[in-house]
Amino acid sequence: MATGDFAADLATLDATLQSIEKVLRVDEMQTQIAELEVLASAPDLWDDQNNAQQVTSKLSILQADLGRIRSMRVRIDDVAVLFSLGEAEHDEEIMVEAQAELGQLEKSIGELEVRTLLSGEYDSREALISIRSGAGGVDAADWAEMVLRMYLRYCERHNWPTEIYDTSYAEEAGIKSVTFAVKVPYAYGTLSVEQGTHRLVRISPFDNQSRRQTSFAEVEVIPVVEQTDSLEIPDDDLRIDVYRSSGPGGQGVNTTDSAVRITHIPSGIVVSCQNERSQLQNKATAMAVLQAKLLARTREQEQAKINALKGDASGSWGNQMRSYVLHPYQMVKDLRTEVETGNTSAVLDGEIDNFIEAGIRWRREQTGQ
Image 1 (tube, rainbow, N blue to C red):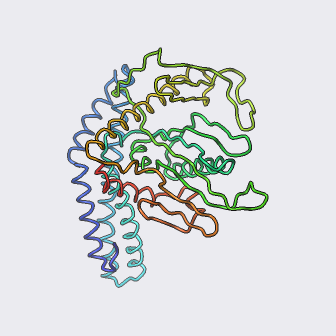
Image 2: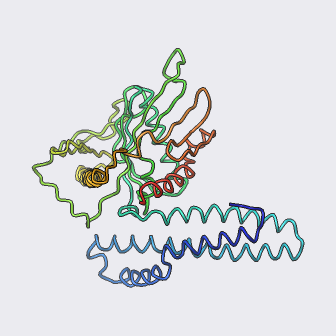
Image 3: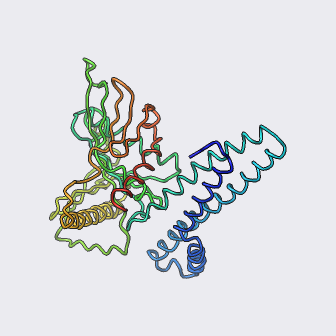
């Protein structure tokens, strides 16, 4: 956006922020916060834990959004004053500082603008992410573990709490599959654009002839269910097995049969959890994951009917979504947005903000969601 004309660039940022304030309805936001603060301060709030969690979670989201908007407004005012001071004093050092802050403001407001695009029905939810190794043998299992690390590092960079529910380790290296939660509002809306097939091309570290290998990992992102989803699952539809938790190479990490595997017989969906010491806790977590997967399946079936009525035969936009090439050249390229970078090590270390932001904008253009 930068044109070199400080005043014009600042005016553009100010207009963008005003647009964001209008879309997010700041006045309504302030009213909702005041109402929720009254509810949150009620002495009997936690008598109903589900309601209390909904109240405090919504309050936290709104306060964070309002805080970011106010912070951007203050920064715009401050940088305008800084620029005026530097211009009046003919102080080059102040002018450089103002220009640097303008660049940071552009980035921050761009990120905030992306937040306004997360208006889907479930976008404000926390996320459940499953990664499965695809074609490519041991290289694919290793690649699946690399993808897991990429997302965990991304979450660490943003101070987003995560919890791994279940990991199925491969025999030689890497993982067959993993399921983990990202426990922050809007995690689903943000990370859902990462769903699809991630393709890796590299010299295989497991091939003694150092041949090039192509591997695949499948990423699934679904929203966490809430009480309002009212998803009833008959007991007769479930098969529940308990087993002993294990780590890499079959090493036991628990001396009791606390891990739980639940099979939903009608759909064939299987979920498991082994991160807790208690069998009851693992069962509760596994049930939550199963409900989320069934909710996602229901949404997919409904969307498929809508697409059929519209004559949409394009298939899922998430498949074959990104390519990571480490040999014979270095390149990560998103096949939907055309965003690319040669800094593959940074991407694999969790620096994927540009890809995610571009994906959110692309999705809005394609689907309006």
